[in-house]
Length: 471
Image (cartoon, rainbow, N blue to C red):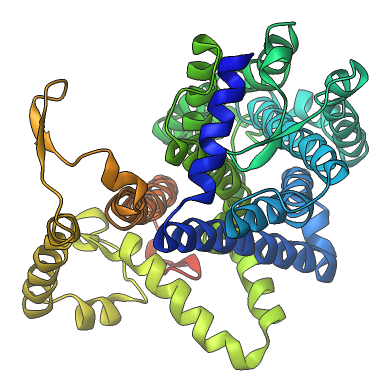
């Protein structure tokens, strides 16, 4: 254990000796992530309280459970880590450390298990028969399932505490965690198997089957309805409504966002488990904590952007004076995904935002935007060069790159945030909306072909609707 102690001491020294810039950057980002998580999940909770209809659907019950765990994490878990990054040490007593270590494991277990049960719910609705789904999933069984999940999640940290182990402040991850010794006594394998591996296998298996089933449903929608019409059979037990497909896609995006944040975390944990020590650089472990915390802020953002009911409740909460600002913001966000190449994707559609799109995107503004992008790209290597650093030939990567020293001075965080994280977030949000819009459009087109009416498709970012006129 001397090696581990030395590693933690090295991290502690690095935490104390950070430059002012690095200290401000690390503290600011974790603080902002936690603030977004706290306010977002609080907003989602208020929306659910003010609108009872949001509590009457089974998928929303799982989302509420996930929001509660994320809110409690941002309220009672992450603030201690923010304070540690600001002060450069653990500024609280040992009892607080034991509480944070217990709480983080508890809330993470709740989140993963909730997502796994949500995946099972979607599997039975989309893949299996509707009759079986209605027998298994109702409000009573859903509430009981959620209660059982929270009780089961307690058994993530409990064995560690009952065995007499203490949580300690990990100076790399800047939160209180279990010690390395417990990993070799089977606790690490227990955590990974029961609370990570099994939920992830369930999530991936169920959503793979769901995605395949939805794709087949969209492709076969027309012949299935025709055959049912000829035979006179009711297709309500075999066909999905547009709303059910939309909810499934939203939940899928929630899972994808969650896995995007947690996959690097799991990889780092596996590397540490194989090495038997925390041998990676301190900035890697700080990123580890930021990614895990970021996962708690995704739920309210995704629902605010993709779900019209939640979005309208958000606007009501903010009040009339703020509605114009947030409507403009959400429309601008959705405009990128719904209007890019709209002519090619939806030639028969009339968009509410078409006029706005034509005002924003023309040849002149496009050329100016491209020029600005090239200028902004110059500021990726410029800070490194201006600071007096030299590129060196990396014999492993076989190209010239920046040195490791610059990463500890905040340059690495600057690169990852501005030139990787923000673009990836924009890409993911926009193409998710595009994918959902295409699926909705396909469903409407299939129905139009079945019922030969003279229809006009009004597929705006706020209110996609279909109006038909008799031919």
